[in-house]
Figure 1 (cartoon, one colour):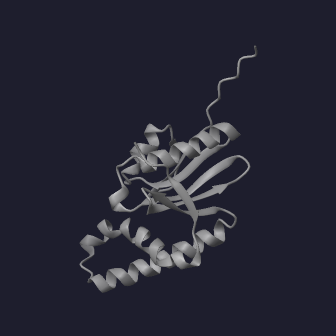
Figure 2: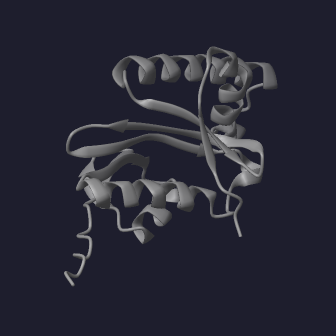
Length: 165
């Protein structure tokens, strides 16, 4: 059974940790480049910095959290909450925490929140991302084809009405 997951807001002192999480999601795609480790590091730092600034600017007011599992930082979860929609901006786990049900548990919490509040849940996902299968199993479907990405959504499910005694 999973230990309870915790979320902790990111701080300015988490930059190196956030970079490590980001870089872990991009290493496989950089293997065929033939770049040196230093070149890969420079590229990843530039890409991380651009993404981090973009998310902070575009999604002002969103929650930017570190995911804590088994007492250790496992990844990041960035979520924007709007009147009709909960947008998963980013969910990333470090390799040693993948395929343990952590991502599914985080997503289920958001799906439950959406069901309770009547909000749809959305996420942008690369078409080739293996996590897309998890989203589909959880009820997400393609709402928009954006070329390399899909915007996927899951509409809120009706909650059972409490019986009146």
